[in-house]
Every structure is written in C-alpha cells, then in structure tokens.
Image (tube, rainbow, N blue to C red; front, side, top):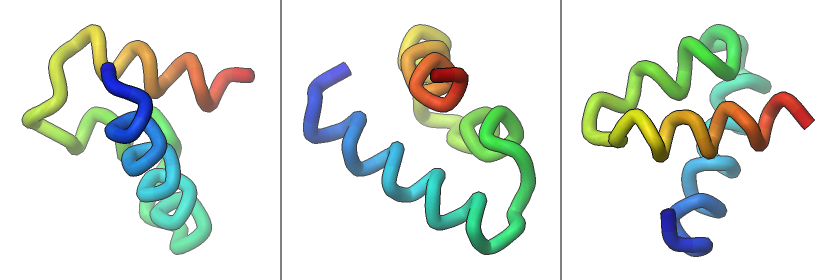
Length: 48
C-alpha cells in the first residue's frame, strides 16, 4: 500500500472512530474496495 493511501485511510478511520461508527476492525472491513492485504496493513496500524 502506498504511503499516501495509508495516510488517507488512517485519518479517515480515526475520524470515524471519534464519531462512534464502530471499532477499527469494523470500519476497515466496511471498505469493500480494499484488498485483504491492505486491510491487514491498516489493522496492524491500529493494534500498535
């Protein structure tokens, strides 16, 4: 996953978490266009 793409998704997920739209995993899984490997990269970012 390109750095710019990761930054956009991480920021988007953080905003959605603040708005109470679910857990990080639920939000990440809601992005149907992401590949499984991209989803794993994002999930790892939130498990730090």
